[in-house]
Amino acid sequence: MERTLTVLRVALYHPTQVPAAFSSVPPRLQHDTSPLLVGRGQKAHLQLKLPHLSRRHLSLEPYRERGSAVLSFCLKVLSHKGSMWVNGLRLRYLEQVPLSTFNRITFSGVQMLIHVEVGVSLEAFVCCFHLSPAPLIYRLEAEETDEDEIIPQQQPPQDSGERTPAHLGVLQGPSQTQDSSPQPSPGRAEIQLQREAPEDAHC
Image 1: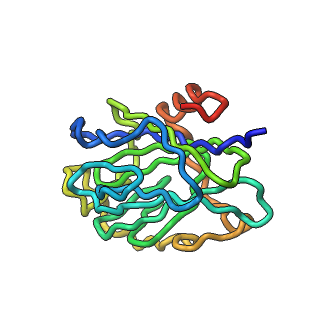
Image 2 (image 1 turned 60 degrees about the vertical axis):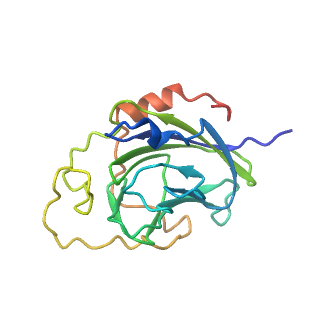
């Protein structure tokens, strides 16, 4: 019997709406358990032709927690350009954070939603991509912006002296990856993704 693959349903939006920017995005991509690279370069598995991105901007990295029979994922920043926001957490170069079931990600003007549908296969996973004509994330918090972005956005507040969360940059076991802060409620676009998602790995 074929083992069900884990599916990452990825929705993408960029305010410039340049068709060429997403011309290399496939509707479906099956990948092994090596890191999946996102960036501007030709060697990126998900290539976004946006001038403000690095050739290797970020990676989605599958891993298996101790005692678990399913794949988990983390997002790792590979770019020196600015910073990235993942579920309200600010990440910089080489920092990483585990992904939850629903994830809000912003970088260089790109808005990305990732919905993880867990399967039982440990050999590969599938990404299904959807290009959105409308914004996916309606940020209520002004801090979810990047002062280093070239694309005009709302200015972030002055440095409040907040400390980097302890789990950034380190993958930890299941007992240590629990975040005491509440998870953000899924927005309208996330709920729509959840309703439209079929039960199998077909996109």
